[in-house]
Length: 126
Image (cartoon, rainbow, N blue to C red; front, side):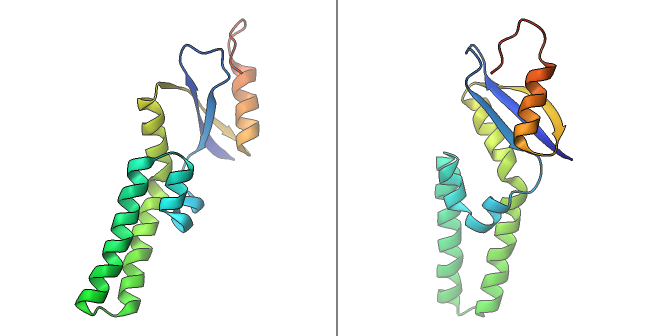
């Protein structure tokens, strides 16, 4: 089972719910700034693009071994993969979303169903 955080926009009728998996993000690891664009993390996307381009430019300018440059980019990608879902949570918080619950479930859909089932009676969640 995986852990998921359920975020909902406060003051809405429950239509605006986001489920985020805890832990490593393979999409962010592989696609870096494109993943950030997809999730509307504008500043993170720009920063990741600049960092990756700067690593390439510095490696070319300094004549660094391409293997070393690839290892550095891999390290940055690992860092992004481990932190990406936390970035999403922070951005959602700034956009007015509240943390509804932390749910253990086999997948995101099951986590959302469980969250709805556990909501107090009379509460409109989704």
